Image 1 (cartoon, rainbow, N blue to C red):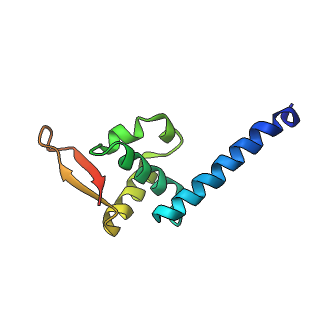
Image 2 (spheres, rainbow, N blue to C red):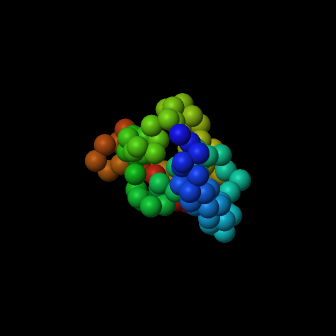
Length: 97
């Protein structure tokens, strides 16, 4: 079964190689997978909350605690900044630092 999928696996691997190269170019290649996902999501969808991020399909396998830990490290390093929402003071709005 899987041996018939070789061309698709080759394409997928080449995409991952390209992704790694791009991550190196923008300087996020040494982050954890979860940190990179968060950075990439915030970069593509600025001014998001952690709840919005975790609601996306890409984060279905990421636990809330892992996401919070990764986000805290990104905030501590200055890669991500947060501010309180004007509409709901309980929400933190996230943006690239």
